[in-house]
Amino acid sequence: MSNRTNAIDRRAFVASLVEAVPDALILTGLGSASYDVFAAGDRDGNFYLWGAMGGAASLGLGLALAQPDKPVIVITGDGEQLMGIGSLATVGAKQPKNLSIVVLDNGHFGETGMQRSHTSLGTDLVAVAKGCNVSDARRIQSLDDLPGLAEGIRAKTGPLVAQVSIAANEPPRALPPRDGVFVKNRFRAALGHATF
Image 1 (cartoon, helix red, strand yellow):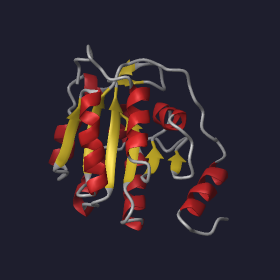
Image 2 (cartoon, one colour):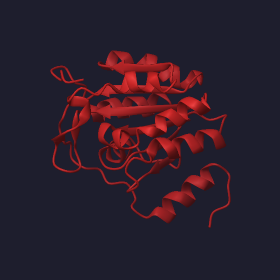
Image 3 (cartoon, one colour):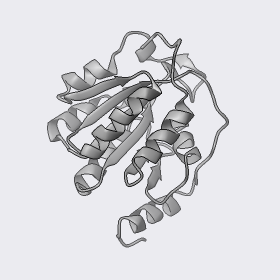
Image 4 (spheres, helix red, strand yellow):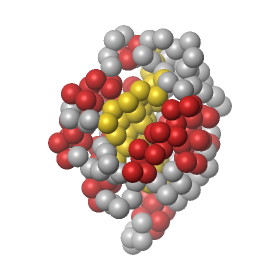
């Protein structure tokens, strides 16, 4: 993923994806993924992580297993997914049909100073996912690939992992709610569960 000459604008991509799958439960990795999902439109079905780096895919797996009739999308960055790389093996073992992991890959650790990440140094997350028994692992290199991705998410024949080649830029931050109890209770209420 080191060639980023025609990389996708991440904010436009995320907004289009959220619009294309409006009934999906969305769980974000920390940092930029949360900002992008919030900028696309805050809603009760969004669960934003403010910490737990490396935990987004694992949390998404638990949510997908608990809510098998709903599409679940984890939207995270390459650095966060690299830290939680072992979660892909568990996803491959459990084979949740409704889980999609969308990795916004700019080849950098955006939250800590834009140091190069392993994806710009040779790690291929599509190959890693396939090696973890995720047969639908794909590269997204253009906005033209988005309709096919949205269709794959809606079909719920997953699991699905998409490595999206995004530009290494920093759009203005759009900060979602930072009150963890509020976000948790709002999300639980959207699923019809009691809040506490």
